Structures are given as C-alpha cells and as structure tokens.
Amino acid sequence: MSEPRGPVHVDAEVVATKKVGAYRHLTLAAPGVPERFRAGSFVALSVQDRTVRRSLWVHRVRQVGAYGPTLDVVIEPRGEGTRRLAAMPVGARVPLTGPLGRPFALPKEPVSCLLVGDGYGVAPLFPLAERLRERGSTVSLVVSAPDEAHLLSALEARRSVRAVTVLTADGSVGRRGTVPGTIGELVERSGADVVYAAGATEVVRAVAVAAEQAGAWSQVALEVPTPCGTGLCHGCPLPVLGEDGVARVVRACTEGPVVRGDRVRWAEL
Amino acid sequence: MVASGCGGTGRELAPYVDLEGLDLVTRSITLDPRAGGASPRVVEVPGGIVNAVGLPNPGLEHFLAIELPWLVRAGVRVHVSIAGATLGEYADLARRLSRAPGVAGLEVNVGAPDEVGAGLFEVREAYHAASVVAAVRREFPTDRPVLAKLRPDVSRVVESARSCHEAGASAVTVGNAVPAAMPDGRPGGLSGPAVAPVALRCVAAVTAALPEVPVVACGGVRDLATARMFLDAGAVSVQVGTALLHDPTTLSRLRVQLTPAQEGP
Ligand SMILES: Cc1cc2nc3c(=O)[nH]c(=O)nc-3n(C[C@H](O)[C@H](O)[C@H](O)COP(=O)(O)O)c2cc1C
Image (cartoon, rainbow over all chains, first blue to last red; front, side, top):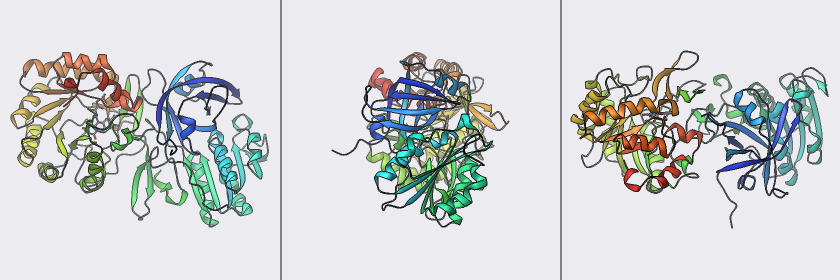
C-alpha cells in the first residue's frame, strides 16, 4: 500500500502540555496527521469564534505511544488566538488540519548540511535533522534566539546532529550574536553543501543570501501569515522567481512554506 | 456551492469534500494574469475577516489550459466567475469560455467591494450591472446559466436584480463581501458570520419583490441553520465562502445535511 497522502481535518486532543521558557509545548493526538507528516509541513488550528486559523510548525511526531501517533507543537503566546491555544488543558479538543504545505526537499545523496533556526522557528528543523541523519548526511545545527527564554532546547537533537551552535542576542546562553550578524562565518566554516533555514523573514533571508554567496544550495521555511493555511484564500502572498525565470506571487501555504532560498524575491516580501 | 475566491484553485478542496458533482464558483478570472494585492491581504475582525486579496488569478489562458481541465476531470461543476475592466473584456471572456469544454456556467462579478480600486468596470447603477450581463449573455449559450453576483446593498439590490434578470441573467447571486477597509485604510471586503444578516436582508428583499428571479444566497453561511435561514427566505441555493477558510470540511457536512434539491445552483 502507498503511504497516506494529503492533509486531513480532525478533532485533535491535547494529551500533554508543558511550559518551557516563553513557549508552551503541546502534544496532540491528531489521527492521520503524524502518519502523513514530512519535515517542514505545518498544521492549522482553529480558535473558537475566530475565523482565521493559527498555523504552527510541527516540532516532533511520534508514531507510537500511549495515545497512539501524536505530534508536538511549540506556541509562543503573542495574540489572543495563540494565548487561547496555549492555555488549552489536557483533554481539550481543537479542530486541526494538516499536514499542510510543501516540506523540505531532501538531498538524494548524503551531503553536509547546516540547519539554522531562530526562536520557535527552530521547531521544524528537529524532524528534518532526524531525516537527514537517517539518510547518511552530516548535520550541524544553529539554534538562535533573542534570549534564553526564547531558546528552543537543542538537547534532543544531539542524537541526530554533529555540532550545535547556540546564539543569543543578549549573550545569556552560548555565543552572543544574531543570525544575520554571524551567518556568513557559520556557513563558511561549516563547508555545508546544503543550508536549511526556518524562522522570521530577516533571519531566513540572511541565511539564503549567505548560502548563495558560499555556493551552497538553500531551502528556507518561511513564516508568512497564512489566514486559512489550506490554499483556499490566496491570503499569504509569497513573491518568487519561477523555474522559468518569471516573477510570480505564489501561496506561502501551498507552494511553500519551504522554497529554494534563491527563488524568493526578498525585496518584495 | 463554493463561493468565488474561497476554494483556492479547486484542487485544494479535494482532501475535504468530494469534488464529484460539486458546484464550484472559481475565483474571479480576468483576461490577463493578476498578482493580487499587497500583504497583509486578510485580517481578522470580530465575526469574520476583512480581505484585500485583489483578485489574484493566473489569467484566462492559464485557467483554460491548466485549471479548468483538471476540475472537469475531477467531476466538478465549474461556474467560472469573470471580471473585466470593460464591457468588451467581459464579452471576450464569455465568448472564449463558451467554447471551453466543461464550463457549467458563468458568474459575473458585478458586486465587488472595491471594483474601481481593483481596476474593474465600475458598477454604480443597476444599468451598469445589466449592461455587463447583456454583453456576457450575447456571447454565452442560453442553455447554460449566467449568474449575476450583486452587492449586498439593500437600497439597490432589488433594482439590480431586476435589471440583470431582464438583461439575461439566469439567476442572481445576492451577497458579496461588504465594502470595508483594512486597518491601514486600504479598501477591502468584510465577510464571514457578521455579514449573514446583511445578506439575508437583501435576499429577502429580492425574493419578496421578484418571485420570478432565482436567488443564490451568499454571505456568512457556515452551518445548516444559516443555510436554512436563506433557503427559508426563498433562496434556491447557497454559497459557502469564508466558512471554508475556517473549516474546509464545512461544505461536505452541509451537502449531507441539505437535501439534494437544495444543493444545486
Ligand atoms: C479571500 C476571499 C476572496 C474572494 N474572492 C472573490 C472573487 O474573486 N470574486 C468574487 O466574486 N467574490 C470573491 N469573494 C467574495 C466571496 O465569494 C463571498 O461572496 C463573500 O465572502 C461573502 O460570503 P462568505 O461570508 O460566505 O464568505 C472573496 C472572498 C474572500 C474572503
């Protein structure tokens, strides 16, 4: 039988919830979603009486466990919607659609990879690191954040990565610095063939530019607001340059969120 | 029916609703490709959203070559929404779509919340809308429906419906996003649960004044109760838009809950 494909819309159940620094980690039982998940895809959650959906990266999936297949998301409560999602207790149910979007492309041959993420944007890089490692690639990870509270723990990634660099803007943990300020040097030093990035636009942009300068191939997961997440509303414009060299505006949720870094028209974003 | 602009290219609905026999109004198609508006395109407000998406679409040629054949193969009943800057453009769109295999009907977008800003033919008076319908009807075979999609403006909707029907519209779609503004002042359209009472007022006005004109209701439909409200007011069918953005399975639920007679266009 072929693998199940395409997103599903289910009533997910919160099976665990944990506050870590500025974030809330939720474990959700969402039948069908973990089985279909590929690194870089995301899920859209509903907030009651709110029309727009909240898109979240998938941090981890477990195929087996006490609750069956589950997935973890990392929420930074920033607005009313994310605050309410973060406050959901164990046992709460939430409509969830996923996995959505185009995932990270994986190299066919084992290569040397550098993964760079900022804030909760590091989340999708963990399952990516595992997949790359399984396929024989060597993985280095850069985890960045403004401060310790916004730093996603890289402890669990240690199994799949060769080296972890921790960057905080205030210097509270690891090296003091930001991705835009250090990425040139990091890419150079890693000698990576492929660079993956996820997080805020200015962060992934800096990574894409550095990769191109170093002659590396890059894949970036962009965080553009996605009102529906499913491709229905055309509300998440992403300006790109097509394979044919023609400038287009595509949907970040459907033709993205992962795209080749050298295809994004950054100035228009 | 899927309301215009709320079903992606149609393909993206496939995981959530059986496409076979589904009535889908495409996002408005223009002769030339349109990139759409600047970001942000959608903001959330209590009871719905305001959108300034700006009619992004790949243009008629790409639609005919790529999107339409896929939808037809999937069994979708495709109603193509068309938008133009001039009567000539509307006529051109209608003529070329009349020759395309598998087009079930047209919906003429003469009620956009900001047609001037979007560069479309300006519809101020009922006769403007009717002139568009007449131009389209001349080019499109009479055995296939042409819907005229009207602005939910209760002071004008009856007159617009009458004029469009006389000009050859098979039915009128009553309701569209309600003219509104984005927080930064750009023109946009309000849609979702908040606009249902506005659309209902307009639907009721048209069905009461013009019982001979079939009305397709559009605005804020999200469940059986809201759909019934419009059907009870005399609408022959309902369209679902914004609700799909919130829950893409809305339509598959409604199709089961409503009898087949109430579901078609
Ligand atoms: C994101 C979005 C895009 C839309 N695009 C179109 C369009 O291309 N043409 C059109 O006639 N109406 C368009 N509409 C209006 C809807 O078809 C519908 O008439 C309106 O949203 C009210 O119905 P609702 O409350 O069910 O969404 C759009 C609405 C939204 C929210």
